[in-house]
Length: 396
Image 1 (cartoon, rainbow, N blue to C red):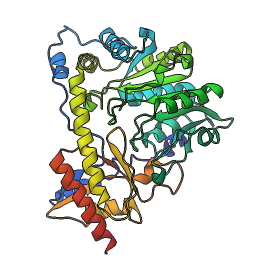
Image 2: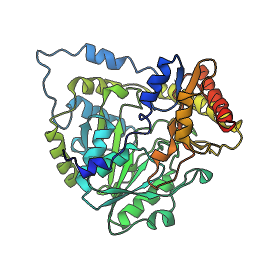
Image 3: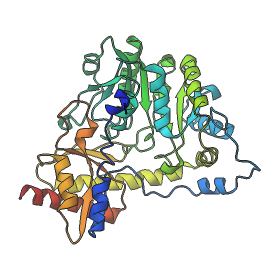
Image 4: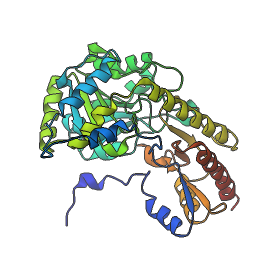
């Protein structure tokens, strides 16, 4: 049988590829502390479940392809509070932020095209880009520089005749980098000057820990034709299983093309949209409490990492991830060893090896992404296991 050359270029997710080995470790009686996947343990606001429970209709029908009106209006209201006026036609509901991203990439990329993305980046971007026939052109960063990339010379040096867009995750996954308003303006200006799209993956918008005002690439109306935003309820409301995302742009031609994709897949799940619409009624107290909790967890991780000799890591300013270089030869080999050979009182730990977050071959080999999504006591234990594991691994 012949398979698509495009899909054959795609790899498995570095966050999930060790799942079979984790299952084998659990069968041996190991307790695994998971720092590898960004699945929050924060309680989903009950209003989601109440809205679904109270939904009554004689037939569970297809939703409209752009999204149910209640959800579209809820999203408009959310952005209005950020001083971003949107029309209904500027918004398309999607099956998670992932599908929203697939939509825009399918609309703007062709075989041989390139999209600039700062590395390290969310590894599933590789799949979404490669199946279009395009490729990621990385903007290089380093742990020593805190993964900083918002520099005109650094970005423009990577633009060529194949470049179609610049994509940034803000706040960053996996780095936790948060762009300043000035840096966002710079990236938008570069996109305008070079006639490029700028795609903002903004699913972690609420999770900033320095008192920053919530920001979006949509705040630059002069770049309305260039800016596309991908958003989601998954992380914002700890509702990853709802699979409701959104594609937003004031570029009417782009949105008309994206509608073809929406109609082709008919609609996002009706009940999930009903619940998601209700989530947007959650007030600021919810986000304040969640921010405080994640900041406490971040600070715990940073304090523990500071105690491990040889770790290179800058304090992240947002999202709920830390990217760090560890004093090991190979993070993937280290992870395998933790699952197959290491235990402390029956416990071990998982992280996401860093190499899969890079587009440049060979980079990230000793780096890891840590998702600080565990409760305080579990997080402390997980970080202690990491320190014990590093010591034992290097002493072999």
